[in-house]
Image 1 (cartoon, rainbow, N blue to C red):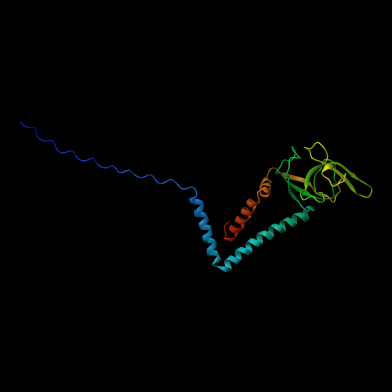
Image 2 (image 1 turned 90 degrees about the horizontal axis):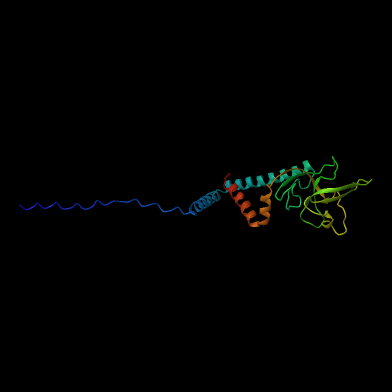
Length: 212
């Protein structure tokens, strides 16, 4: 007896695979943010009154910072109440990038061992060193010799030509407190001027468009 023919084989069921999403583009998110900020600026520029208000807000911030600085100068009697240590000549007491807070009061008088900031005539950058000897004559004139804690010799080589001591007119202030390494930001901004312009420009831009 002949065998019955086998039924035809069913075609295989197709399997559909979900395609993996494309990898994110690393620069897409920053570009979208920049486009959003530029769009906000353009919208603000179309409203002159709001744009002028934001400009005035930026001016108020700048003037407030200047008033705060002037107020510190009056309160501390120092022309530069906050300075940044730029070298390692005062290590291990103070390191590069430390912020010093200065005062210039007559009482108490300067004593050997005080950390002072002074500026020699003809030099643009002040120096942060320690007083080594302090002499006061009968007329109240001070003769001060300074030295860096990390230096081998005193500062006579840093003074003006044939100047053996500095006086109170060269003293900008006496250190009262410090914050370690906070001033490195200022050093970076001075070493890389383009970074300073980017930071100041971006802060002004965000203030203008109303971002915090």
